[in-house]
Length: 619
Image (cartoon, rainbow, N blue to C red; front, side, top):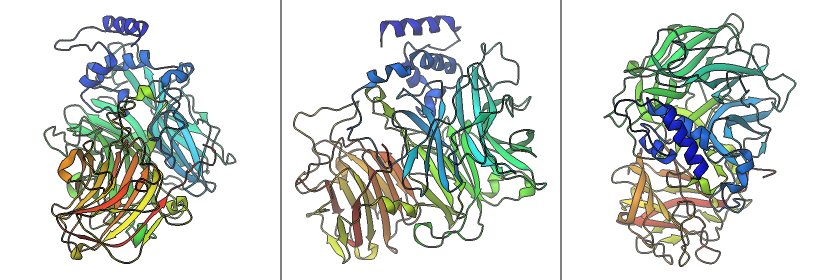
């Protein structure tokens, strides 16, 4: 930290009144460590009294665009930077917003801070578009804060929809700093927060095919939380019912009720960009801090949709209307990993009720078994499919100051319903990113012995797709692993706080029905044979899945440098980061992908592997 920056922080500390029992942090790092919830979209808030301290420090420390060159080494050749996940060319990226299909193109907006690899004020809406959900193009920034306006400190998350006249409309949370917590008008802000959150709108025009031009509505469409309601947050609008022809628009806003828990507030209007009226709570949770599935004090980034039924592999063609899924991103939360889990409930809903009854629903369930997915967003495309993307954070150990980028979005997922659970499958269009020919194709059954791991041949690079089907009934093994071996050059040191050469294993365990990613200790793996033991893991992430001896296990793995997404045929997904730094060089065991069994032999009924291409026509 520079002397000038430390001086600015000390000035901020002296200007903030002392509170009983509050130890004011001396720098941003300790402020984050003392925060009572995640380092997620995080740095935008810390709860209760420390909120204003940390936010003020972030604002003081955030680098300006002129400082981009000082953010770290050139990351154009960074071996951990994804190439087939949507992210800006540089800068911070978080929540996916306003996912929409319009005029023959998919549009993906996201939270973006240009010129900084960390969260900061001046949050914008980044934008990318695609004709086929596979190949993407960067578009100009869609929304920027207006100095002195209701979004002076940031254009936060929201949604995008077409109004009854076909006009594209963005609804988003605008944030401005109040003059001080004691000087804000009652009911104008959430309790314990030094900022004013309001809901804003911006419109495009039907002839703007690329959605690159947006005009903001001058005044907020919802200026403040409902009067008299002690909310702990008020953000992330999401349309759940399309209006027009005497049908009302319905809108959810993420919130929480003080001393009770997370809540979603329901609004209605005859017009998408004006006239919103508060209806009441759509549903309310109950905070239980000691429960691993605690639903948190406040709910961010909600979505609510009717689930199609699953009909075949990769989501198939959706049919009929099943139950509804309500998903939230809760905080604070009892957490073990990088971020809070995203939780969902699934159950019936009647339009006339204007409420979702959690008591009559099943859940909460974890949406993802990994540790970096947050703030998912979904929409229904022209084919009737329910598509979802989420924010894939960087790992907790990565020092963002050493890089000029941070964060990306997950691959698009198709959501369906089966057996009272949400089924997630990668969008079938993603096969369009595969190399023309498979690097490895296994049509006949392959038996893998614990003593002789199998190296996947002819597969090179760090952008890969692997698909396997295990014959569970013919596999006496207790578990099976896909090893991603990292080359560890002699004397290599970690880069950006990430240990160089971190090998990982994606493990399917029949004994305890779990899917996990194991981070292996240095030198735990024989680099020649790929042999290792699961007990050699220094850390792991994952959870319970529908893995039995009675049914085959189908697994898809997408590795994009550090971004790892794993899908099971039963609908579970695991998203995490693996900083291998670089795969082994050509000739040292292909891409360093080994297949190995533990506790007995395992039978692979079929398998294939592909190198994957970049999504960007122009990087």
